[in-house]
Length: 356
Image (tube, rainbow, N blue to C red; front, side, top):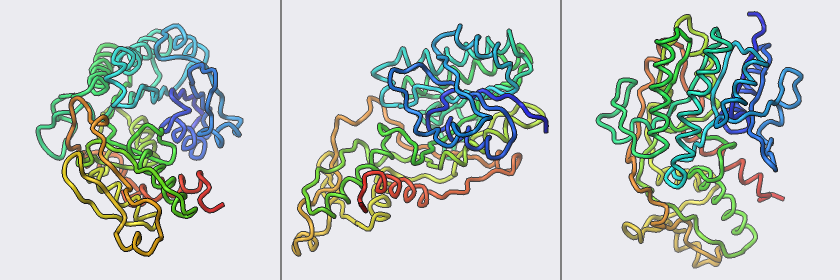
C-alpha cells in the first residue's frame, strides 16, 4: 500500500493518541495530529508518537472553520479521522452550546472543508452510545432509534445525521460509527472509570503509609455500561475506513457491567475487597470489620454516594451489538473488562508512587 496522509483531530486525547500509535506501528503513513492551541499543552499521551519522523503536530480548532480549511488545504489528506470532542457527558449540561458547537457543528466544518478541498478523502466521525439514550431494547444495534438524554448525546446524533447527508449528497466516503464506552490508562480524570482507578490508587497508598483516607464519591453506581479498551476501538475504526464502500458499525464488547461492579473489581485488582451496606444515597462500600479490629486501617469507608454526581437525565443501561463488525471486518475486542480495570488501576498505582 502506498504511503498516505492522515489527519487525526483530538490527537492528544485518549482515542487520538492510541490511533496515532496504532497507525505509526502498523502502517508507513504520514500522520498529522491536530491539537487546539493551549497555554499549557499536555502531550503526555503522545510520548511515543512525537519520537517518529512520520508524525507532525498541527494547530486547529473544530470550532473554527478557517483553521480546519487551512489544515486540509495544507495536508490534502487521504484520511481524516475526527476524534476531537467535548467528550465528557456530565459537563455537557453545563456547557451545552460549546458541546454542540464542537461535537456537531465541528463535524459539519470538517465535512464542508473536505467537500471543497479534498473530496477523495475518507472521513471518520466518532459516534457514541449516548445517541441511543432512552433505550427501547437490548442489545442495541445500528438501527436502534436515536433517543439521546444529554446535550452530548444530541450533538453526536446531529453529527451522525450530517455525515449521512454529506455522504449521500456529495458521494463522500464519510462514516459515523457508534462507539460504546471505551476506557484506558489515558482516560481523562473527570470520567467515572478513571476517577475510580485513581481513587483506588490513592487509598492503597494511604493504607500502605498507615494514613487516613477520604472515600471515593460517586453518583449512580447501578448504571450499566458496555466497556472496552480504547486500543481495540482504534483498530476497528481503521478497518472501517478501509472497506471498499462506506458502511457504519457499532463497536462494543457485547457485555454490560455496572459502576458498582467496576468499583468491586478495581479494589480487588489492588488486593482490597469491601462490603456494600446501606441503601440509596446512604449506601457505602467499606472495608471488612476484621481489618479495623486488628488495627490494619485508619479509615474504613472506600466509596460513598454523593447525589451531586447524579445526572439530570440518566441512561440506565447501554449494551451494544457489534456482531456485524465482527462478521464483516473480522474485528473483536482483545482486552476483557477485567483486564481493562486491572490495567487502569495498576497504571494509577504506579503513577502515584505506591511502591516507591
